Image (cartoon, rainbow, N blue to C red):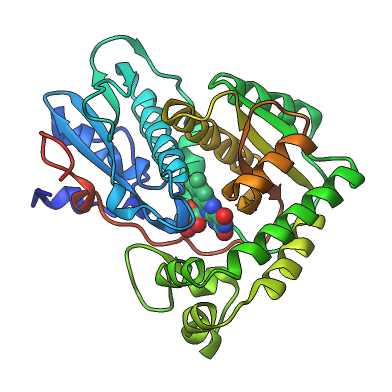
Length: 347
Ligand SMILES: Cc1cc2nc3c(=O)[nH]c(=O)nc-3n(C[C@H](O)[C@H](O)[C@H](O)COP(=O)(O)O)c2cc1C
């Protein structure tokens, strides 16, 4: 991958709060990528590569960052890329540029997920509150409190997801929630029983400074535990502990929503990611954190059981909890310069 040694591309996305940007042309389109990089991604793999050339911005899936055990089909990888795409479009939309967005524009290059031609088409939605929320949103894995979101907000979230053909199933009834908790616990035990799953997870957990992966303090490990957590996960079947913790977090969350799509294709995964961006950013703009309990979606049998539970003939993609919580620090990110591919594709 060719890196471009342009200083402002090392712009720390954490402090990229200023807009409009002073720069112009492709440089400006590159700087706006700082907001795309604030998107969530599985295990914070940041599995995207971007190129910017003559006003055309391309997003590539970086399959070298696929979680081979947890995400063999790259479904979650592509969802993460879809979310990053939506961050980018919302940021461009703030400046009012027209954009034409083509998903999967070249069948011979399936890793090319999207092409954004800036200067053609219609201006993208102008949503300053969502762009501001990108700076605040985190996956907050602590216990949540508060009332469920208002009916009005729920309708807005449903509508935002529906724009991308993503259905939302809110798990409000205690009996359904309890069955969902059973599915999550069962999936936790099943995944953690696999040494290969635990090895992969441990490789993306770290206590030291790194630009990718999940810092162990964000997984609730502090002091010495923060350092030994990856070794413990890799060595021992921690399924029972994980299941007990996830049961408590899920039972105690004011809102749980399952995102589901009518097909299970890369195009549907990109759209799920775009819906996810709206859901998490709109929730954050309303003061609600988000976190994931996707385990049942990651195992074929559990996934079908989840579809049956929510009475959907579609494909459950994500399970998200929302609520009020104490703030947590931001997970690290690669700078823009590290995710720029050369113009001809993703090497
Ligand atoms: C498709 C997808 C799946 C994810 N699955 C999980 C998950 O199962 N458990 C979890 O704790 N976090 C999950 N995450 C959240 C990531 O770990 C998180 O986005 C990443 O560590 C970056 O942190 P941030 O969201 O706070 O910016 C997922 C994120 C995405 C986009």
